[in-house]
Image (cartoon, rainbow, N blue to C red; front, side, top):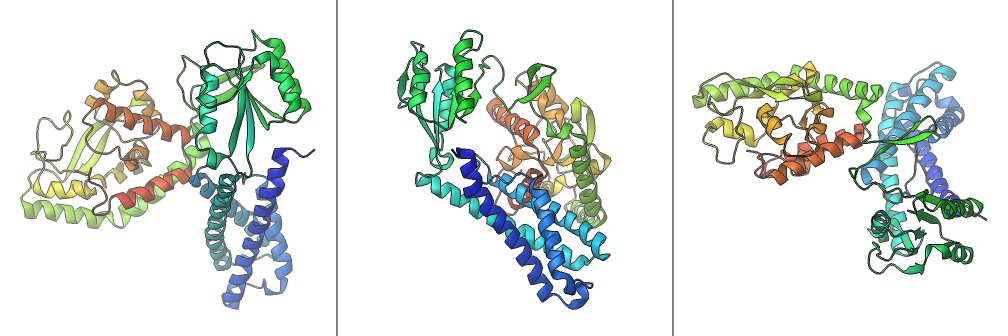
Length: 470
């Protein structure tokens, strides 16, 4: 009997892999045809062998990069990131093999092939994911689920399974419970007491079983359910009760024979991830500081002189940075010299702003000197925005997990800013929302997420797109 995972492999993964290979080969052969012969460096007469190397490279990379476009809750950004990783790794291995076998490296051909492949495969994967979602809206590719136990945690699981069911394709057949008070959402079918679960399972066949029974109190029943799922190729999920702990994405670790949960995953704790992010910061900050920044500096200096703005061009202020350490942030001065600079946030009609400074703030030009902080290593291009030390002292005592936002280097822009949490925080709830976005970024960081934030920031700072820049 073929289970649901096997069907999804043959119905979704295999067609996607076949079209991926077809796109890679089509792009490469089209470029060979369009580019002049001098760009091929002698590969024209060995196209069959070269194409074979491309297919081999793809086959190796597929085993490393997970292409799971039919995942129930996959985000478009994840679809895109996997497509980019697959294309980049495929062409990296392909280039190495071509150099080893044919002793040549047609840079123009391989470079254009990589760019065009990223574009083509990203679009195809996005379309394929949309096709799968469309099938689920038509009632196809569903996952039938049964829940054993009806405590508060099981109720949350049920609610998550039902949320967006037209996209995720989950169908909750019902639940078993011996509790008098049920925590299940309304409309979910009650199938009977826990003792009747095995009898029902023998007559029905769900794809997944979620069990929230406490194993110490229901040891025999839990083990019978696990055994039944193993014998019938059903996916079993244990739903532990985590009440009293923060509800967030936890990282599972094995401590010898004991399973433990780490409070949060921190992708940037990985040395390779740190290296990638730091290398990106150095390259981009150097490029900007050595090209456009001198022009920007002269523009700001002339603007200060023409408008009669008194004081230094730069404004320096202590901010709270990585691991709670303080650093001096650089900004173009946009306010008159005042005694409240280190304690009071800027407001929309702040009388401390100069005429030219108001323009600098509305266009976000005042933030550009922070690329100096990025190059020095105090900041990153993307990360939680650094707050004044005075605000850190205040909010760390008012907001739970406030200091967690300092587990990453502060950034010129961040996830909170592109989601509307920018500018003055007038209420405690606004600051809590900003902190929540910062922690989400720390727990979900990827290079692709950084690129998404940078692109959204560029769009946001265009005239008329950000009313919070003041």
